[in-house]
Image 1 (spheres, one colour):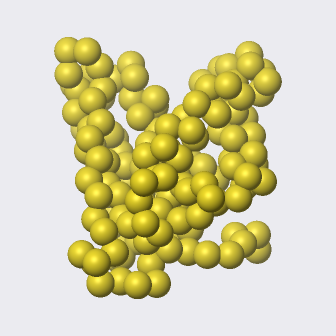
Image 2 (tube, helix red, strand yellow; image 1 turned 90 degrees about the horizontal axis):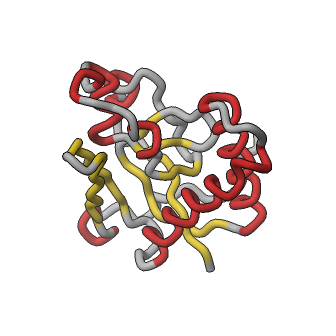
Length: 160
């Protein structure tokens, strides 16, 4: 069984702190690559919040503060890998979707590795800072027992 994380919202705060908030239930990855060329001058306002605490949604490419670990099927991984590769072409100028697929697979594999040891409904947060060697990411794990929210993860299809 593979695991990944979905965007979750407890209140409306993400709508206020991110330029583009992720949609509840969409699959997420760290998305730290977005900040690889950033410096202190880029870290202002909502951009700073996305850098400091935002997971990247793989449908809207918006940001979210909390994600919940849940099971994912291979077909869903294949689909979001394709979305991410297309995102690399459209936003970052990758030469082709085929050329971007390995990087997309690597980003999603990093997130599945992060999620695999955690029980379903475990919440994750990310904290980033700029260092002399680039962007440093740290993760916080909040177990379902800590949250007392048993039905936290979103299950089922997101196709509307």
